[in-house]
Amino acid sequence: MSSQQPLQRTLDEAPDQAHFCLAAGRHQGPLLIARGQTVFGPRSATIVTSGEGTTVRLRGKGSRLLGVTVSGSGPRFDKLDAAVQIEGEDIVVEDVTVRGATFGILVDKAKRVRVHHCDIAGRTDLPFGLRGDGIRFWETQDSTLSANFIRDARDLVTRYSQRIHIEDNLITRSRYGMHLMYSRDITMRGNRSLGNVVGTFVMYSHNIDYRGNLVAASGGAAGMGLGVKESGNLTVENNVFLRNTLSVYLDTSPIQQQHHNHFARNTFRLSDAAIVFHSSQRGNRFVGNSFHDNHTQVRVEGGGDALGTDWQGNDWDDYAGFDLDGDGIGDVPYELRSLTANLMERFADLQFFRGTPSLRLTEALSYILPLLKPQPVLIDKSPVMRTINVELPSGN
Image (tube, rainbow, N blue to C red; front, side, top):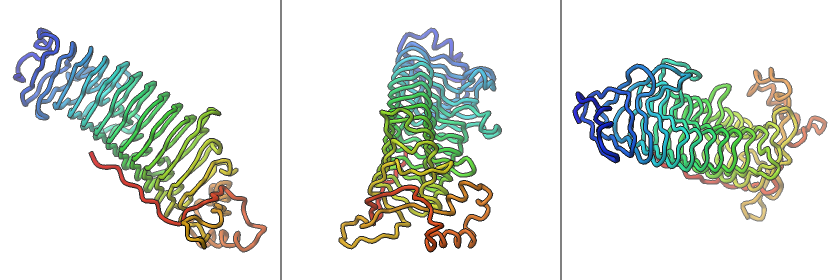
């Protein structure tokens, strides 16, 4: 189809399920794709914004947008101006490039949507709070987000949704790599979050399967690998948390008495704090995880301890025990005690002296003088004495 033809009129006059191949060049939006129609073309075929509103809308059942570039949208954040907006069933957006839009791809009140292998770049001229989401699912069911590349956006977010598969995506230089709110039965596997403020945040959600993800370089004062707030029934397995300020933050989670959170075979490396609890010392289980090269292994905000958490068979690089029978399990429990951590939790200004000889001497004295010995933060009765290997998620 020539870029000089009135594209919308051609679609309106065509029958249901018609297919249209766009030629290279600019095609004027806005565009409505409905009635199961398919618009496809090379990346050099660009649907451009009119300067107002959303550029491409997909409606009905079975409509598809494949391969093309969508350039820009209206500037209205309050009106959710987007490059692509989806509402319907069995809709596919695949291999689409998005540039210069307020929001990237919005999916609203939809079922069985597939957003696959799209390249979405947000607006770097705006601060995070004024950028739109790279991809947002709202009241959506039984859908898939896979192999997308999102950068310089606000969030990849799922709200009020259920049975969503989020797999093999790469998100970088954004606010929240992945953000769940009021959602359930969500699968998040093989994703990579690199250099975002927060890798993944799970809020008011339950039944979350979080496996094989890489979360790295969530830095700064608000940096967090995986945050969990008032959520339960999380399975967090075989993930790698690398060089985050906080790798896992648990806030009142699980919140329901019958819910539990299970952390197994995860790797925590080079974190300021690997695990931080905030009113979440019950209903969590950590089994077979590896903790190495972290400044603080586990911290409980506001004092207290994590003795109510189930710790079994974890690999701690600061374990000072022994294994005389050679079964790979320490013969004495691992007990985490830190006088300096307790002091810094109570007196935040002491963070200025972190890593200095004065605090190191204070910590050493706590082992020598029984009167200074702090209460344990956690006890792992069966610490392992070998490194646990975890496979990194494969690339897109």
